[in-house]
Image (cartoon, rainbow, N blue to C red; front, side, top):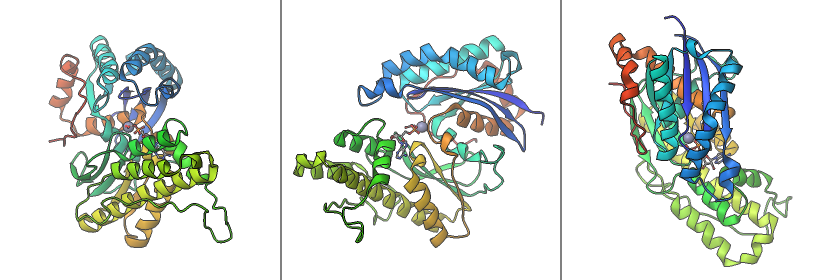
Length: 369
Ligand code: KG4
Ligand code: ZN
């Protein structure tokens, strides 16, 4: 197959991102991956405001496209395929990227492919740290632990695009729980990085004995349940109750970091325990992490250690840190794989997809056939 130049667009939440990739059978190169973050804007509101996000995407998407083209040294006329996140996400935000992609597809007369946001997070695992080409270490069947602000799922994949959701959160996503705990503790936004940074700083007052003057302990919800589902809302509430017991303690830095440390460990323990149990049952060859929370250092390290201890023959795959959050390169990687699996007829229909593609807030993961 000759190489294709893919333009990828992601606007599902609060990052406006455009990437350019070169896609070949055994090789995949990210030529540019521009991400314009709106974090500071939404921080004043303590969460993402959908209409504000859409307004910023509209303002930023053209400049971000031009930066990507300029870094990649590619002109619009060289693009062979346009891919865009079509869902799930915030509908006003998604619509900006989808409509921009539809217009480009029509004007350039190039095929248009809608990609599921979580599929993008999963396929971020295909970028190799050394040469940024397709990872040879990746073998099916595979088990993906998807952890983001909107999702917490265990997904079993027999092959490319064959998704079976074997467990998921019954209430809050784990990233949402990190964000809410950060809000309770008033330590900043987005919550995940803030909580994990303070957890890393945690030093018990009695370092010799590694004990703290504070006795804080949180539950590990559903850790012993027979299924692979999760629940994080009770854990977040446990943090809220703990802090209400003595609000004056919230001025104590050791107390705050102890809470962050204990909360993070409780969340990580549940995620790891369920992933190992699922792997014992489904016997994957690869386990991978996906989504914004996969930036979490404790989760990355401790999941690796648990796999090494319990299932050492399984390959453990992690996305590069720079590709854990929302970005367009991951959408382009998924598009590259989808394109390679398509028939000539299917590719042809994508030329008219600018008429049909819709942003869908609750888009479901669909297998290829
Ligand atoms: O995938 P993502 O960028 O957006 C969604 O698709 O939701 O994930 C964002 C989530 C947020 O909840 C954020 O707090 C969390 O990922 N996150 C982290 C870390 N970095 C980002 N959670 C825990 N530890 C981190 N280091
Ligand atoms: Zn995401």
